[in-house]
Length: 314
Image (cartoon, rainbow, N blue to C red; front, top):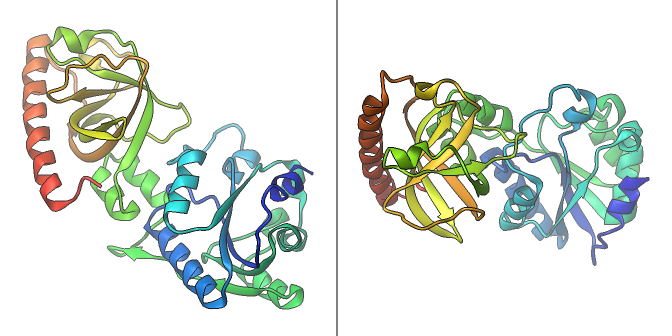
């Protein structure tokens, strides 16, 4: 089975305390759980590990409509390790894995990853037909000889910090809310590709970002953003939408990097969304649009300068 091949790729030098989940977004709810995992592991002299999945298990069962991801696998692994996790194992969720019972799956973790304990969130469910709920996992821990801990959810402003809540905030364009739930700005990245050239014609050349089509994207509108090129930060204003003033086209993500003149076609650009300035709208003509862009850039510049002073840029 592929799951065994992937698990055998890591050989921990000592016993481990594990958690299991997609960890999409690695938000503050995830970080709270990870902090509990790390705390318990240190007290018991064990390594910490995260077992995650290359794709969301929901995508396997409902293939017609994939759940948009918040962070790709490489970014998830980076964020998990930055949170202090010793190792991350990414499993392919396929038919063989879906058929495993909770007992069989946990047995593989004991065999390959030296699992001596499991720490999970309150909605965790493992195994075929999600049979391994919290009570079942607690019982399996007693029977199979590993410790089991269920961590309460992290509440922020009365809401549970979750990937679902972040997707909901993005769909509403509420990127300020995303920062509160995730502990950092939502980011998009991709290669800069050629666009229509309309921005340059208006005096505001934009970088058209080739974003993964399966990536979650904020609601259409104009946002104050920070653009990162080779890890150097630049204030920017980013439009997400279909440019309706010129007739509805395909949805694009275009960043105007303030006071920036370099040619960056073909290079990778990351954009952090700090605050929404306005929704996308159709203007009466090009001049009206240009006047609005001038206001957007001025507002974005001012907002980002203020955000830098308060540390809100992430």
